[in-house]
Image 1: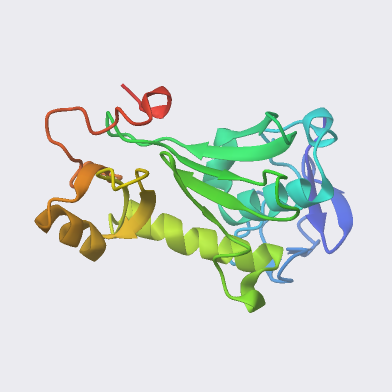
Image 2: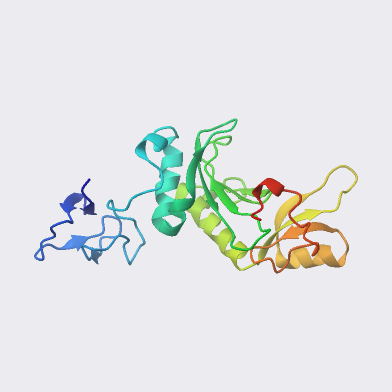
Length: 220
């Protein structure tokens, strides 16, 4: 199977590139080298890159899920290897599950789950955020939702956002993704039941039971 670069909509065989040819990224229009797999300017993945999901798998999902997959892996090609097609209740849909390197920390899951049409959901442990109804209206497009997801993931990576479970109130236990400041308030007031942060800095309690509320997703 030959590898190709897409150059302004024209496919060029990169097995025998001609030095006289000029190669341009079809997304941003800037000149690139024939050997590039990722555009150095906009991070678009060229067609010669082997993707994690096959055409057969992508044929199972909606157009929104396909667009979500290509857009987010084009921005973050390093996440492509964590992609999969899942189906439970409302699928099939695309999920990207980014594992933590720290034992006892939940992965980050980003999905195009179709219980709400054309919405991206991000999950860190049992806690999740839905991009369409938790972002301003001007950011409810696919690209806007992905930008919101990127902001949340940066917060999780930097441990500015933490997955928490509050102690039971009168009727139920509250779970969520909260700021480090809100985490500290709950901790000081004795309202924190469990917490997990990306690098493990704010895991609570410290006896190793912090992940017991979502054991199937914790990396041992």
